[in-house]
Length: 96
Length: 208
View 1 (cartoon, rainbow over the protein chains, first blue to last red):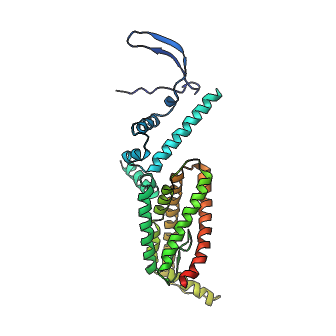
View 2: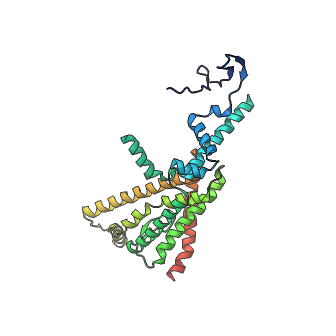
View 3: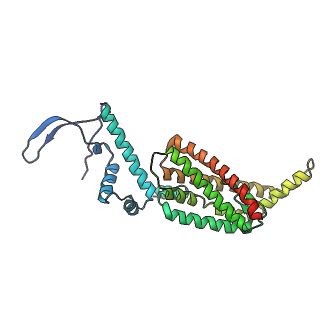
């Protein structure tokens, strides 16, 4: 089964996409509006998986490093890079 | 599969710090430094500076041990100070010390090179050049080829160690781009200066 990837960037102008409508499968209700996507959805699948693993491991980079078979600084650098990316997204959103 | 294996091998050769850092890397690195000091005692090899390798007679067993410790300490101190200044990441000192110590493992190969007649040939060449200036110096083609080959081997091993040091420094401090290479070069120069200063005070004590 193909896993659909949530598009966050406009394929036409590369601008950031927003949610215009939400649909309830149970009662067929559709809600329309203009909603921003959460910051986490702007991260790549790998980065989102990393954050989930980080939370599941109670925020222990040491445990994560052991499980991934990587060194502690390698894992910490990945986290630092994600933090940096999140900060950039936040500051971009503040400017808009 | 072959490409993946080659990429994996390249990583282990030039950036093993992706997998090993901290106290494990420090233990391996320190054991390597001690082993290298022990070999230097018999192979007349000197690491008389953070980046120096020279081949001349070893007079005292304490000398190679001190040279190894001082070279390593100089790199640790220099990289620590420079990285604190350049990086925004809160890196662990044990990772920097461990990966830098591990990056110096190729020095064992340079220690072993001291057993080859390379340095004797070079020193003979230098002596003859000084004593017989203006006169032709006869070396067999084999001697000259050996000297050239050993020179190339020394350069290749040194370049490998510097590449390892660069990756060790980068992964421990999470510095990237210009900041990374610029601070690394400054760190190497500072380490070389520190080691030379400390060694200049240490040699008279060791030689008694």
